Length: 403
Image 1: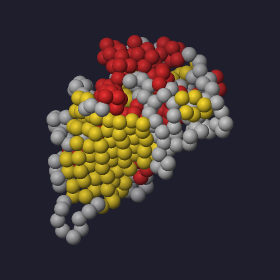
Image 2: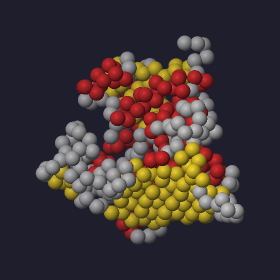
Image 3: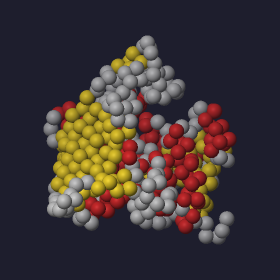
Image 4: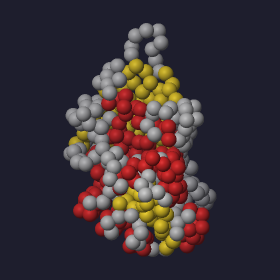
């Protein structure tokens, strides 16, 4: 290790799919971003399932493992912690990490609603620790380019926005009644899951949302009961005992953007569904301005469709492939046409987290961004009950696009 290299001790809490993704992201940092001089060291991982704790050592490369996450937070060699546990444990672990003085990278939603999310924010602020939230869609190079086009006025004044995050991961009626469908464990349904991502994406590229009115629907009101700690929400159970789905499958919102937003004065529609039949992960946005517009879909994440100008015989959308001038693309691929994938977005997220931890400019999403997204979700839930518009106060410390 050279003198200019900074070693960062990493702890992991929960060794599921996302825990594995985080681990691979840390391991990629010295290869993808050698100029940073940051070397993550996988110190200790925790999981309540012994086989997954052993997997962390034997396969992922952690030096130690434990069944108790408190041992991760107490470990003297751990500088930063990845929190990848189920939603209902996020706030508890996030608060504990802050109190232990550990910077944390936590998956969303941070809490089961805005109040829990604010409790994590308060703990992080009091401890003065760095935080990063798993809003991974921000980091797609095409999104970074879209953000730049909006900010530099290439699209003119932004007038209206459409965002649709539709997935089919719960479209099977006999899909297991996992914790995701229980309000005490998950909080809201697709609002906290997919809509939270979409709201943050809007905040990041267009600016803070000022007011919302919403409606929600639960399409599959009962599902086969799944024993806690077994399987995943992708499991299909035929002929099992049914239990109630306690949160929403679909949510739709009308939104207005705040006066200091890059898209000040714009209005829009945001929709999210976890039960759509057809879309696998069709997470797409459309941004319309007085001089042009753009479209992006995660299922084709390396493409951006752009239309600028209203005159001539070549008007309309042009499909542009992400290339070296788009975001972090050049760190992964040498030229347009060779695409990046989901895991690469988490490597970018890890880079922003570790740079922020080591004192670089805070360009990472943070706990305040999580509060801002949760506040919109909370407002949508309240609006769906009352039928009224709900206004949102500003949240300080966010990385939203403002003028």
